[in-house]
Length: 355
Image 1 (tube, rainbow, N blue to C red):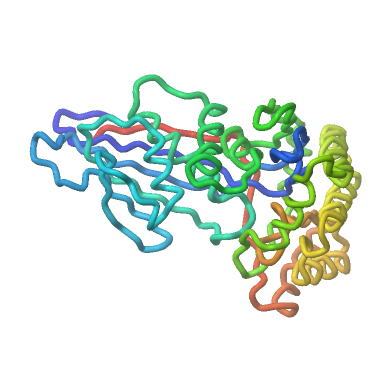
Image 2 (tube, rainbow, N blue to C red; image 1 turned 135 degrees about the vertical axis):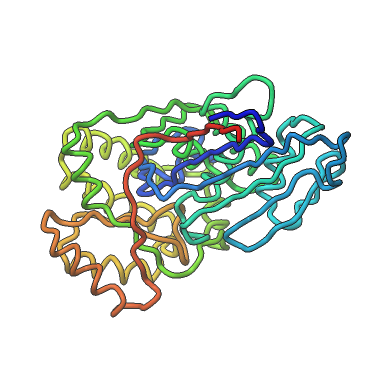
């Protein structure tokens, strides 16, 4: 894919988002050790870097990095040769700053995701993993997906000082059905579950991602949960049902028992509410009630829970009941919508073309 008149490199990277995170909240520093089972799904976060062959010494523009955040219609320039202000899109700017990039390159970064912002599906982690994976191809050597996930976690916790578990970055880096065992924060092992195609296809057919129409954001509810669990000699027994749901969910998937897996989803959501009732919002309860009336086998409030965000629904075997549920959603609230997904066989992918 090269030619004699090549003028630029185009680096591509994609990373899946995350749904149905059994064991979420146990992948945090205050949990100390945890277990999470989650699903990497498409639509993915997409990054393209257009690298000019022209260097600054050859007359390139002074703003040598252009960021195009396509979803926001925002396009601007930065120069890591000077101090970077985290004032437009902090996650993107911090990701660029953490990389040791060559000083003589001029390039443009285009970022896009078709998933609504604040969907509680680890989209920001997917964008960060894809961006770092792409930028990594501009540096000497190459990081593994696990190393990219760790670097993405550092961007949020060290650069931006945000509360952040480890599961989203790992799921985006590895893809598939991930079982994560955190033996000491932030260190963890990751295993992709290898299951027969018929189980994979049936899961893919039955799982639905329902967006509640409002962006999720951290709140006083989350702060109350963290403050309670981060105290000296805090009683952290409320986290154990979450770890148990992840481990039992893994066994259910391996055995192909979707009824048992649905029960694990429900138990996990109940355990989230046990941390704080506000983690399962009124809107989420409305969707759960509708799903139950249409024969759903399971439901999981994605991510940490709280206002806004999304749920994963495990539908019954009959496709017509799934369609009836989808058709009934707007009658509960016009903002509720199903986001089409399919399971990702792979995690971070990156490649380049010279044109």
